[in-house]
Image 1: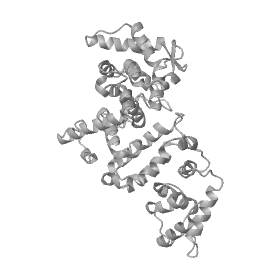
Image 2: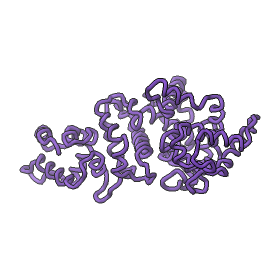
Image 3: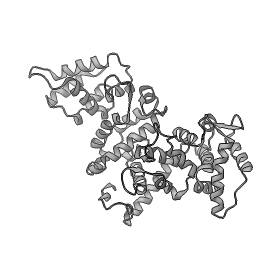
Image 4: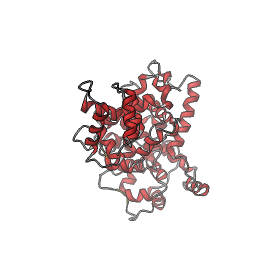
Length: 399
């Protein structure tokens, strides 16, 4: 179960002073990722407390606690991590349960050392990473992560890779600082009063106001949140879901996100009627721009050829998950700017390049984040990156 020789040596070296930041070797000896050390230490201390007397052997106390705690828990890292993160008796993790783990990573990973010196941004980095974890891992959309979901995801592998990879920006699924910077800056520029919530008119400004008004309505009706948005406001956590879905419509969560938006009556399919409602708004905006638009009948035929649904009268979630052109499909109905961009591109070009090159191309999100970060770097050089800020010392966020 664990390398008790290593654990015993650790306790001899550290005597009776146990600091969570030093507990990484114990976690590894217990077959857990190194960065779980702080969580493991705090769980031990909270359940066992300080040694009762000088005669108490901390190593034996820890060994007894560890064996008793994990005796009836499956040996997978996912099950053990979830047990450490959650209160006794709860079998799933909520966003707040992940915060101590991400804080430990922030405070100890060498790739985040520069951010450690800007504590005013710690909470935002932690919240961003937690939201990304739920976006990728919580396939049930319940707002609670189970051990089964954790075990099936790439999160444990990412935790293990953190031990070897010092460049945090290569950890693009969850921990990248550059991705955090892009997400938080995008939110900050929309959140004019900086209350960490944005309203419909603020979100409408995103992406040069390309989003369909009907899509905005659906987002603020709570169709893509575990719980409906309150007071017609979108939280930062919900914005993370939005921007990841908007900039990469090929991921499983993004496909589900926009499917929920377009399924107006919630019957589990997108009907031709629902497609027409969204296309009418695109057509109206194209007319405003002085451009001609295809009749719906002609346009929907092209889209059905793109998706190849099992039943041509409706499009199901399964149809879209089989389709390799979901970005093109959703942009045709949801974003007029990206619809116009797609008109000038071959929707199958990226897929052909991927097959011809024989390796995995960067995702749409990774390409967007890279380009946007470079753009923000240029703005920073010109002193404009935080032009809409309220005068706070936000320049410290830049690395």
